[in-house]
Length: 164
Image 1 (cartoon, one colour):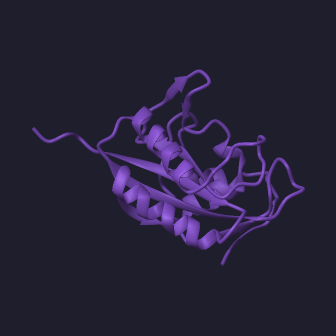
Image 2 (cartoon, rainbow, N blue to C red; image 1 turned 30 degrees about the horizontal axis):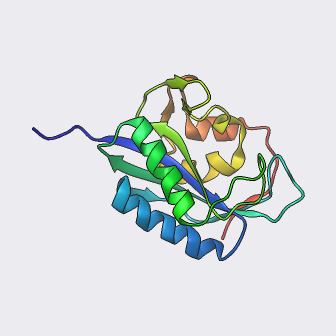
């Protein structure tokens, strides 16, 4: 019996080291450990959000077809971050790579202090919505019942996010 697959959406970002190479390495590891990348956004240069006293980020959104359950996707994403040298020193601090699980199909998941899907702040952040809108503009947010394009159009986040 074949396992059902699910489309998950990940956001990759980093602001240290060879950012393009690290993102590309992360994508390769995602394909090996999580599933087939079926869509990939352009690379976006983004001003730092939260802790603004740091270099800008590069961000890429991915659509990935996976058979892994949500917690296994999270575990594998954290392993990939670790494999690529991610060290967690401060919230919203500089990092080599960050892999956020934005959506897991249309599921709503809330496991306190472990996993929240959809990502709890994604609808407030242009650096998430802009690359995501490139690959999935009509994807519906299961809590707000609005498309990614609609969320982006109504956004009040004015940080610079530009395609490179």
